[in-house]
Image (cartoon, rainbow, N blue to C red; front, side, top):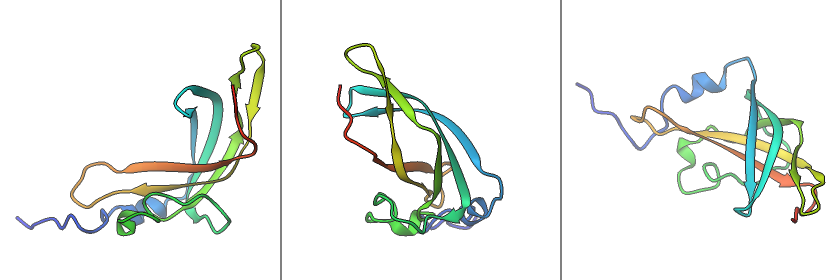
Length: 124
């Protein structure tokens, strides 16, 4: 039985990043631990590197960049919203989105991390 080297990225990470179809996700998000954002739809493009300005990512810019796919293109299809203290729906603009897959060799799963910049400060 061959030994798996846990100090490199999973060998399937490159194949996944070359896949053609985009992945559409409907997600909820919590800002500052108490502000739920709903109704947000994002599209992940595995085969397109994020060559534009984007937030620093924990895999790429952290201590183990060799486990990362490096930042990929993320498109916000629908901005999310929250209900403010007056009961009004407030839209949250997310810009400069990107994502990365961090997947260590020998592990059955990896982690997808998304990063965004807020268009404006969000307050309750």
